[in-house]
Image (tube, rainbow, N blue to C red; front, side):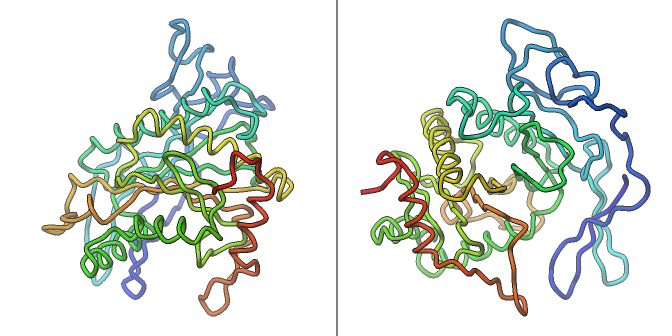
Length: 336
């Protein structure tokens, strides 16, 4: 389905406008296209972790990355930035990839092995690194939805999106982080870690490399933020030790959600710094290495977010949400 990015000058927000019929529709089949043995039902793979020297586009994979059949962004497109009168328009040059996380059709985070989650998180790192080598890509984001109502595919997967613009939410975070650093000469995320761990009342889990907490102004009930304790703006340079710690942490958090909230639908989003090699404005990323901090956001029931007059409404006190989640964890999860 072709499309274009249009910017609203009154809000500063980008909108992906799609038109026409979907392209490359999936072949009619009752079989899951992501299960081993059905590789012919998907586009040819971009990358994969494989055991025993198995061939590409065949069974034997552990994690597999393929182009999205009906992509939001297309790597083959030319990058076009143009003005249409007072308006801005950008072509959909980028990438839409599906990261199939495991051969098992019904695997969930809480039942996945640590090794398998390490492979998934390592593939996140590999894809972000690879996509940022493209000088026409400005931003990469990874999302993972679980239990989405009406979803046609139930096999565990993540989506990797690479775009020629900086996502609005990331752009807002970058602007606020830069302003905070300009005023205090400190990273707002590092300060948040110190504040939350000192107070403790919103912290859900603390590991050697990460802190998990319900944000002070959580936008949804039981929203969680996962911050690395080591300052770094780019996820793609995460260490193997941090990946292993994060894998254990995500597995435990998924178990907590199962016990505390009866296994809710949830969304996991990776926020990492944009491609600093691509600059539209001179000096655009001067302090990003010091002022920004990559992180993950985990939101149960993301479709239930509500607002009034543009103000987000959360009807669960963040401190109460954190206490309930802590109590649902094992002693290993509970911070001291």
